[in-house]
Image (cartoon, rainbow, N blue to C red; front, side, top):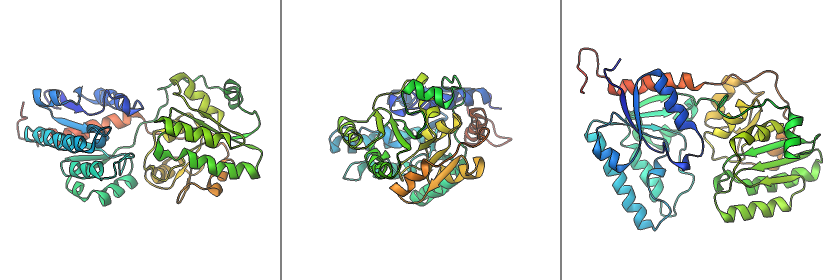
Length: 359
């Protein structure tokens, strides 16, 4: 064991942009596996102290993207210089590889170029699935020289309130039709999730089947997306969009009220919402890529249903015929992930046997 805690500068640790509790859960689990000190990433912290690890989930969130393109370019140069400085002082850069490409980019390619440059600084890549890692290697060949690890994301059992309500009880809470086949879309509503197109697909399904209902819930990223979804929903029978932030105590109702969860974007390589649904014991329909391929091996095809290509009416209609499997899916825990991540950090920082640790 190291003689002192591992010192970690964690990007996005205190950022509202993270949207889910993965980072606090992850570092809590790592801290149970071994001694660590964690601080949110900032230029001041990076320059003030020496760090063992700089851990980044979403590189594009390190830079300003809501400003003039010249400011974004300058921010890219600043962040890359900071990371090089940290490496010069002995820090190792760790990248948890979630999104092959940033979900929101500029038309000049500055953001995607920044992520490519970032990939050349990385010492270790942690992927939630083998399939995702393979796709990252194709997109960012520079990481072939990094230490590559696969550590599945922990599930959300015990994280959110769960009164273990039945489907009927949850539908009563949300005022949903008692006997319909309900598909649920839950999570932050961002452009890449393609919700308006999903509603257009459902309109065709609803025209053929009157036993179905589509429920969308989550906070839209902007007013224009809110407007478009409300417009499509108003044109679609037996569809409802609860366009607001879903509080923690309400998550259980949305998931348990549905027959299945639907991920309607072909861009999704990994999905916290899918793990959330499985954590509440609801089957999912998602694109056949990234973590979905590995989940099929671990939890089976009764829980994870996949599709090739983009969302279309024939694919969405399958969601309403998915049956509830018996039992519960076997999911990875944060305790397991924490032990593996701590060992991964130590492999970068702790010197080989016979060498003294630099303190």
